[in-house]
Image (cartoon, rainbow, N blue to C red; front, side, top):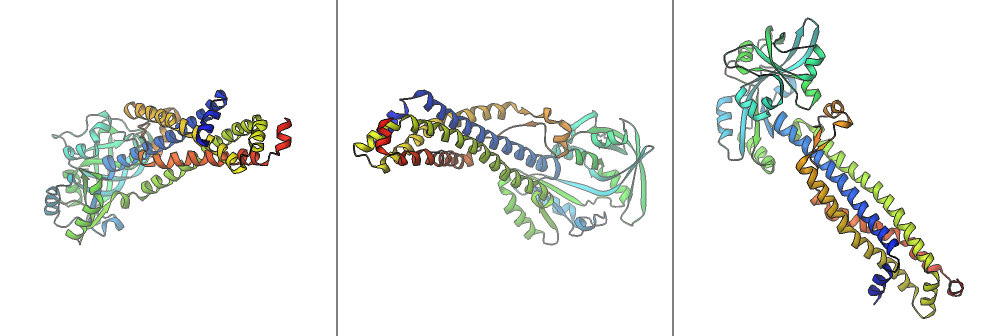
Length: 404
């Protein structure tokens, strides 16, 4: 009976009811869209770290991560690499030769991380070819070619086919210098890495380091992200003398960023819900004040004040439930559109986005896993907001209310 009465009361003033439902709709739309945007940004960042930077897993000599010296090669590298490639969870495993050094030009110098790579495998693993914005990349019939990032090229005023000198220490701690010609300039979307990383052919770098046929790193890309933890445990058991790390170990700042942004998105959602709460509070207070005489009459006829309180509460609940589906459907439609087509955030500053390692095109993802949480937060906000109007209704004096 009280549910039917609440439903009828809702539509006695359609404008006021529509205002509350629209408030709920907009609140849910805004809150869900914010979570979808942040989820898309973090998914994009994690995918960039995995697919274009470090892979799911990396294997090194235990001492290499501490000293970063090329003498610490992966023991029995060919056998380890061959065995990893036979594992069903592994999509791709690539060897890399690594050494820190200096890049010298007539204009100055810069510290760099030098990657010796097998071009066909590296192109597939880190999508390096897709990132080339100038030049053709490595040529099989040429030696001493180098690829540099756009950030480094801009900083050092480097052009395609320009000569640079790389200086580093070999495995015997002798200082080695070699001239390279720029075969390509790439832009990964991560400005700090574009300024730090340079790529040369593994055969060239190995000859200079005196590590022919060896390498310091095995980067692994998996078929499914879900296999990460159990495969890391499996590799640790299979190769106890080697250091097996996941992308979370190698790039802990990325995992921290994901957790921080997830918490920050809830702060934004709470701010939106506070605005929603004030809107519902104001509208329901108006509703109670307009029905002062009616509420007084109900009390005079024997309706308990608890039922009056419950009536106001149920009205708010019904309005919230009526507005929630529209908000969620709107958020889903908008998110689905931008998930397919991408949301261009270059207007916020392309260089600023790149400096934090984010792509300028973000693909929002609907937060299905948080749908119940969002809905409960909105309903809870609406019900809390109506407590003051309901309390006002309880405080009405019957005789005074009937004289209005």
